[in-house]
Image (tube, rainbow, N blue to C red; front, side, top):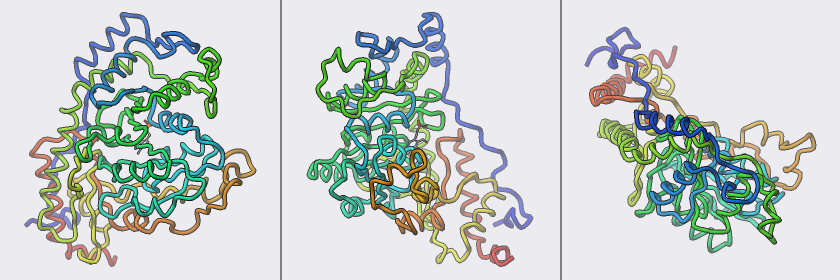
Length: 425
Ligand SMILES: Cc1ncc(COP(=O)(O)O)c(C=O)c1O
């Protein structure tokens, strides 16, 4: 084995990987057709057929509902909008609690706050990094109204178990499925197991429209409320003669015709786009076989992983070298990766200072919940010393390049004791 690149040896990966491009001629054609139609949005903010959007938005939603076997698909202009709308759709109010994981993109925990709700953090599982149902059970209190489960990195949370728990306790289960399109648990797609599933179509995702999102639900009432919140609900409450108008202040979360047209093509090719990431993730995992101290992402029995991020675990005790030093050596070999994920969200100043809106501390004035210390020890440990990730969705890599990534991992692993001097220095 040659000398490590960080110690002056040859680099293993010889080219910077190209960025994955998912836009092809069919997307270009779809955009051209929208331009020719001169209708870039078909939404109208009062009751009538156009309240539900233009022809491409409707076709996109129909295709999405069909692909996932859901009764309703409601498109939105981001997953963040979708999560916010979901909180309104379930009727969340000030002081109501929503259980969320700490290891996720911030929007997951901001959604309850948008309605004056209180995020309550429940720890994640060691192996899949998704919210732990036992921690959820322990966090449920008299004010709990919902659970947001995040299918992190493309792996399903324990969704069937969480749905059964939610149903038993009269709560809503919302899936933040931003990272897990076409993942599945027990043969059912993620995003369709909770009461509402929220997908992201931002440009980092497996399939995308630049910005965009979709909410799926089988519940007619939730679908109507999502549609209303998306499009200035207050303008249609009277024509629809709705008795229950709670949490129905409207926004503009509408998706345009251009994005919908692109999204329809992307969805039609989803198996190809996602299959590429799955193959990449699985090939990298295979390269770790037999390497003690480095554990490939676990796929729970009965689950399909969508590999938004390939997330290995680093055991510093077994490796004998700090993760940061190992990472510097991997960088020098040319393997693009990152350490940890986001810092557990309760460390954000918003939670530490307990000020949401204005200067008085609302909505935290409504709760005794505190966000001090390392609330979720598993999330803390994984972030600080164990996660070593590769952004599968970012790169377009050939088999030969994956083999080079694997070789870089194996090379640094084999020569890790040579790094001890660097670790001390
Ligand atoms: C888990 C998770 N939730 C929510 C979002 C928000 O998605 P969007 O950018 O579409 O609002 C993201 C985006 O990266 C995400 O990863």
